[in-house]
Structures are given as C-alpha cells and as structure tokens.
Length: 82
Ligand code: SF4
Ligand code: SF4
Image (cartoon, rainbow, N blue to C red):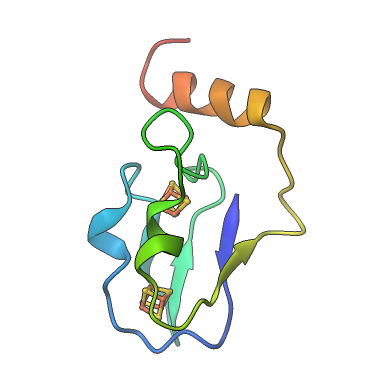
C-alpha cells in the first residue's frame, strides 16, 4: 500500500482518481486505507494518486510493504473474484 505524508496540502485531487475508494479526508490531511490500496494493481499500470498529486507526498508505506502478487490477490478479493 501507499501512504500520504504530512506534506499533503488537502487539494482533493487524488481522492476521485482512486479505483478502490481507498483515499479519504483525514483529520489533518488526506489518508489512504492500506486495506483498500492495491497500488492500483488490477486497474492501472501506475498509481493514479501519485500521478496527480501536485506535491508528490504519496509514498510506499513502510508498514505495509506488499509484492505485486500480494497486491493482485488483494485486488481479486476486493473485487469479489477470490
Ligand atoms: Fe488508490 Fe491506487 Fe492510490 Fe492506492 S495507489 S490509494 S489504489 S489510487
Ligand atoms: Fe494531498 Fe496529494 Fe491528495 Fe492533494 S493529491 S489531497 S496533496 S495527497
């Protein structure tokens, strides 16, 4: 999964781009639910939130490192195919 750092300027550009609805407004800045973020695996070749973020504050979550296979399985589970 990816996570959003405190550099986030709350611009709301990323939230509608997430195919998994993993992004929401947090108390101080936007956040990503690691259970829902597939790093866009299953939907797109690149992380859509990273593509649009104007301040590059979305990074790999060191607490939720996953392989491509794990992300693919998460995608299948979230989409009801597993
Ligand atoms: Fe959503 Fe993709 Fe960003 Fe994860 S990487 S939060 S799935 S847009
Ligand atoms: Fe924050 Fe970047 Fe999302 Fe804007 S696009 S809300 S700066 S994480």
